[in-house]
Image (tube, rainbow, N blue to C red; front, top):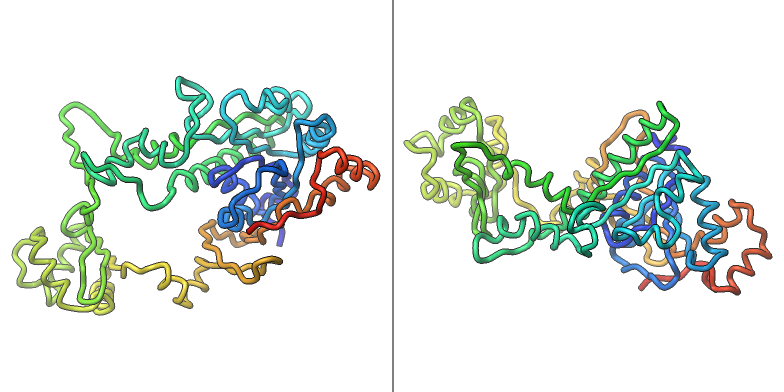
Length: 376
């Protein structure tokens, strides 16, 4: 079945994770996403297999006149452009929003970087850890005096999804007005969104933030507990849930539900599976704290589409995680990871270039000498 974004063409000029995650997300919902890179900027294999999925890949040197002209032809026939440059770089290359929107007024132009396009930090380079440091994430994770980054690049993937959200809203607005617009998002904006609960402040408010590597949760009934053979994530919140929890045999003699030491001793007496059965049977949220190896080995996750497998031409069977919303009429598609630059000739041919013109571009260094560059 066609995807929700069928017929939408996206040019993805981004590197690393955040911008390419936006492109991958749009591809999952049916967009034709073309990844545009110079030949010398060979990406890392693992992120390419991850966030390159579902795209076509071309190598194009836009610092040469013929390369820039080919890029303009692509942009003229595209709906969306994604770029991750610092402020002013795209304009110097001749591919800024104003330059492209004059040619294609309907283009939706998303700028995705570390600190945004405005303000004192607009020219600063940065990666996920820099955004975490700038927004308090690292201190909350490590505690005062011992900052440390969260173990996952939340802001990279989160910013990619936020950018895709903005792109789809801009495409919806274009349906009404016929015009595109510029979108500005950044790792720091996403970090602020993820931290919004901690940013609430008002007169008389005394924050009680959970921080540090030893923190197991926000309180005794919402935290991790070590069991006889692993870890259990417990979440008990409402009064009704507390009553059901207290009524369970192991806890009915416990006078104080907030006594973490007593709860630790009780949970340590049985296996994680036992506790999941007991607590879930009472309608309480309890989940085993599993490793990624457990997730991969659990066949049930295949039914929930947490993991998908692609057949890559170089690397054979490659597994991926997937978290896109499931839609009944326009289902998500996972696609495969392209060969780096492997679609260059096909895309140029679609733009109307003859074989002679393509060979001339190859001879001039506008495109690579070979069709597709393997990553190792």
